[in-house]
Amino acid sequence: MSDQAEEGADSQDTTETAPDAGQSESTADGTENTAGEGNALIAYFSWSGNTEAVAQEIQNQTGADLFEIVPAEPYTDDYDELLDIAREEQSSDARPAIADTVDLSGYDTVYLGFPNWWGDMPMIIYTFLDEYDLSGKTVAPFNTSGGSGFSGSLDTMAEMEPDAEITEGLSLGSDEAEDCADAVADWLNSIGLAG
Ligand SMILES: Cc1cc2nc3c(=O)[nH]c(=O)nc-3n(C[C@H](O)[C@H](O)[C@H](O)COP(=O)(O)O)c2cc1C
Image (cartoon, rainbow, N blue to C red; front, side, top):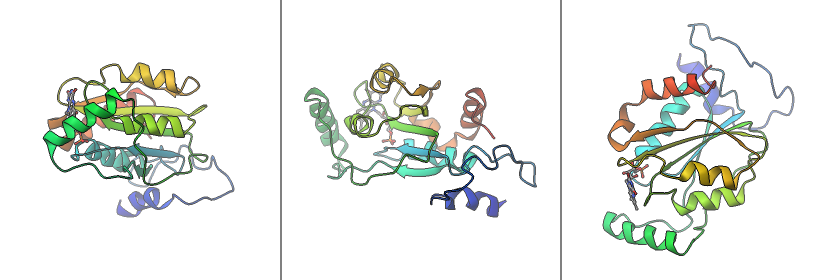
């Protein structure tokens, strides 16, 4: 099993031939691990680790590549300060810079994860959606929150990426993130991205 899990994680580099190879293989132990196969990316931002835990579970189950959206200028570690900073970023419609870039050209599917900040996506997700054109791709949104769910963020995402196919989202409470295997499996099944 571990060998198969590693295959997905290591397949981030570009093989220029046969981009659609292996679409529906089953692995020897019966686990279907086909959604990754190098053509799906999990891009996520997480400040306190909850959304990251969900991203890692999606990676476990799909073998997709992972890209953490890291701010070029790190956020404070202080929660109360962060609340003020995030509110200020939102009210000024800021676009905090992302530290790294990623080449999305080889990916058909982008899982996009973020926490709910002040009833919306963190502004760094706006930066991501501004910088990357997701036209023609399937975008599978997931988030964690203290209870607000996605708020209006899926509508905003659809406005910013009108030519992407945005699936039903997966929204979990902060305290559900560490133990989310079943929720992730159900979601992947319901959006047709399970192996
Ligand atoms: C700046 C900030 C604003 C937040 N605003 C909301 C909110 O409006 N509604 C909500 O349900 N949770 C809110 N939360 C809670 C987070 O969405 C929740 O803790 C989430 O799981 C954090 O994800 P992370 O660990 O991946 O950063 C906020 C948290 C922060 C830090």
